[in-house]
Image (cartoon, rainbow, N blue to C red; front, side, top):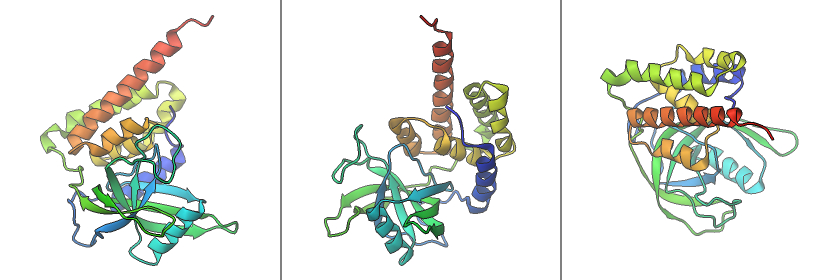
Length: 239
């Protein structure tokens, strides 16, 4: 289970630092819309303060991002809840996270490269029925989940680094952690939660964690369990 390439982690950490906030549902400088477009994408997690690069090529989502860029530039990232290929009426998890389009580039072959900055978690109230190619919904906003108890920060920060070290046991893989060693707790939790290749339900549990301490505990649990599973698999004799 490799992390992102080192070069990309080095880019994401400083970008996260510039964009990071710990505020709740409505930020002082951003007014979040009640109705948002939904981008259902299994296995992809966006958290408040996180940076998510995306490659858009399906026509319905090209239309969605084009419409968003002409409006408030807000997209709702959410995972399909069914363990099967996505279809137009596939059920979605109730909780997702809004992202603001901070960068976009149209390619010469009809694709779009975009970057989202995570803003705020939401719960879907109801989906709209209209003529658009993509799904939209009315949402209620939730606390960011980035707030933590300061007293627990130092010990939990070290536990998380230790768990990540177990997750990447080889010397070559250990070098992937170097850009994260000086990261704050919020940066470390967000980058690891978003970019480690956990399952759909595991990523959803990280998104739905009520605060940063709970999210860090869940992340440590997932990292340690993955390391244990890999160790047990490697220890099995080959017939």
